[in-house]
Image 1 (cartoon, rainbow, N blue to C red):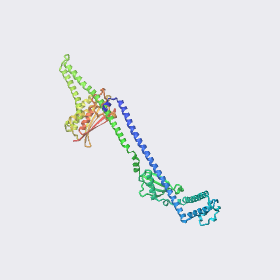
Image 2 (tube, rainbow, N blue to C red):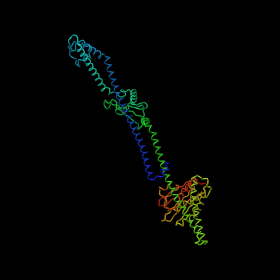
Image 3 (cartoon, one colour):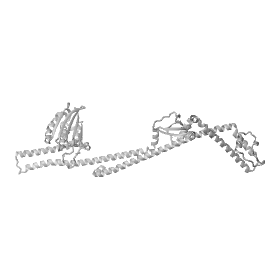
Image 4 (tube, one colour):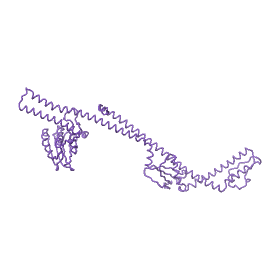
Length: 520
């Protein structure tokens, strides 16, 4: 129904409908691809942000672990010496034993007291009134004790930090990092950010020398590599770099897994586009065939009308009593009737032959082994008179050393006759016709060529000249008569003989037809 409707549309309307539908399909496909590209970009950005956050946290955890190590080490050392605990117990006891009032210990006194816990409390300058303490004084005393404790602990922390800055950075990276814990930390942080992909990592010094790499480390050019500085507060030469990479194939699979649901949609759209193009092509082709059939009917009407009119006129003359019925007149009129009848029958036979091949009725071919050189020579001798009547010359070179082919004599004769007849029809009026016929053998085949110096065929028309009903001059313009079936018939016959035919032509120069047939 759609094809029939399109066939009734004008050519411009078909082009507009096809253009609109094509733009819509291509636009839909473009939007889908753009959406997929945007989703992939967002997925990649989310992945890269997760990797960066993970690496930053891992680097921070390394510094935190090192700080914890130094704090634990120093505090345990002081606790082992019994200095911190004993010092503060004596300090607290001295305050509780004091009376109301008194001066607050200076920082120097606190430090001296803590470092010398066995020294007598009476050596410090604490002036207080003996007696019972009020609640307010007790609270004030407790706050002062907590304040002194805080200041002392801060001093200890400052000393630890100084040790870290000036001592830890002097150690090599491999002694500062537990690589097994680093791997576990990396895996945990990546998992916290939703990344469960396999990875490879290594640690580099500030001079890009490799310190460590994981056992299954591998790297190919183009893989995704992410880097993060570790121990950023160290001098530049002491800093390290944590480098992690993900195999490209695994990462791409992870990235594109988020758009898998769009693949069927794209496939359906693509199939829809292809189906539309095929439908439009078939409809346009159907319309073109319909137009060619209309041209064929017009040409057939003209071709049949001429011989019928001639036969009718000759018959009327025979019946007209006023025309002298001499033997010469009878012979002339009967000759005209016979000639036009043959012409009419030949045209009808062409149509019937094409109908036979449309129905694949190749069994009617009467195949036999023939000498192609001899057959072509007979056709040439018959045709040379017609060429000379049109002011042309016919040359032939029958050089095939093995001319025996398995063909239908009548149909093969019609093929050669059609090609030579086309040379006469499509000759140039301003130049004498030159027609050349050659035979030879090549690659175990029989070759036949028919070459002329006629008007030639344009390149865009050359591929269509073997189509049924196709004529370079169509419609009711009858500068060259015919149905557009001659070359279509030639190709059908050659293909039925398991051969091939090709045409070479140049506009204004001439055309060459070459037939290839298998040898018997």
